[in-house]
Image (cartoon, rainbow, N blue to C red):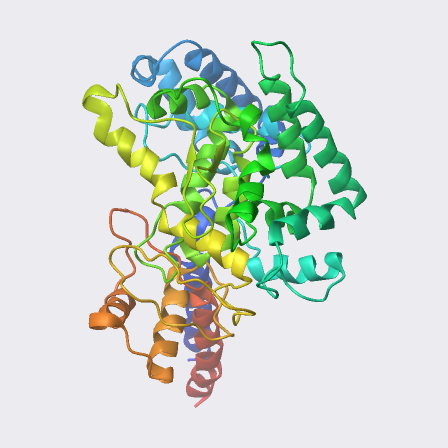
Amino acid sequence: MILANAFCLFFFLDETLRSLASPSSLQGSELHGWRPQVDCVRANELCAAESNCSSRYRTLRQCLAGRDRNTMLANKECQAALEVLQESPLYDCRCKRGMKKELQCLQIYWSIHLGLTEGEEFYEASPYEPVTSRLSDIFRLASIFSGTGTDPAVSTKSNHCLDAAKACNLNDNCKKLRSSYISICNREISPTERCNRRKCHKALRQFFDRVPSEYTYRMLFCSCQDQACAERRRQTILPSCSYEDKEKPNCLDLRSLCRTDHLCRSRLADFHANCRASYRTITSCPADNYQACLGSYAGMIGFDMTPNYVDSNPTGIVVSPWCNCRGSGNMEEECEKFLRDFTENPCLRNAIQAFGNGTDVNMSPKGPSLPATQAPRVEKTPSLPDDLSDSTSLGTSVITTCTSIQEQGLKANNSKELSMCFTELTTNISPGSKKVIKLNSGSSRARLSAALTALPLLMLTLAL
């Protein structure tokens, strides 16, 4: 009898541990090989230390050289190499913007992922690690560095763009790098050549990558009440050199040119990942993260795809790359869609307005704010409580938002927000995606807690 009871106890513990270690209890990248995510430079080092991975990686690079994906996959050796590398750390690796070996990291990333895509994709996955910081963090740091104890939206009378330039001049690093790109971008080469655009772009990239966003954002996204201020904002990147050209190229041609460069391709993919309009969030931004969108936008400055304000209108915010859709032929619809991601993007517009107004989705407004531009499916957005969760998990943010709407008695136009709440609370699958939305990682902890709670009861039963 004792042996039978002991056997039952060990069987129970074994099944509990198995359930906790099962793939269903793992989430995100842990589902693939149960390994932590590393940057691609480190992943390359790990691969080089393993003979099988190293040889397959060399094979894949040879396969990708000068071949399209279909030609590469027709070769069995190339296909086998790709399958092996999908089980290596290289498959899950990501890069950090501004890291010491960023270009090398991105080259490694695309050497794997270009072989996984079906030709030219409209939206590509970002090779960069997700952004977890929020605009509210930028506001706090901007207050400290400016020495004013206030955020950029306190005074409605001052020229915020001029104030931002003055704040930059008080910081040695910001002043040095700003003076550098202004000097380079204003240097005329010849009567027919306005400037050296390549050097101008490089100086701009150094400025936006090396100067803290507490300074760069204030110059790039300052709020304006008059045309003079808006013109100063438009002139921030010296557009006559860095942005404008004699003729506007076709946007799809410009995108193709950008994608031939690993850095430009990565920044564009990151912009789409963080600024693509979402109809399932309050702000129209993925994960309601304004900071991620603004960082991705600033990250494109200094490349062929450099965006800028199209005019000096202080009330209407319209940004665009220097391109149009003339001559698109049967690709005109795709071209217009690409261009609208800049010119008619509610996420980007809301993020720029939010920074200029000193507001974020998880904090109360500090000053008067302009009405946010909403995505077409949502006509009016209720205000959010101060304690809105910063979680990037859709499930958590939706539950918090919907609960706050009901608790505060806020009414949405045509009850669209509330109907969206009930719809989203009953599904874990995002539309158009085969991926399960990642909810809280507490499911495995809940199972462990339940198992530990049941264990004493089992032991008591067996003892009786």
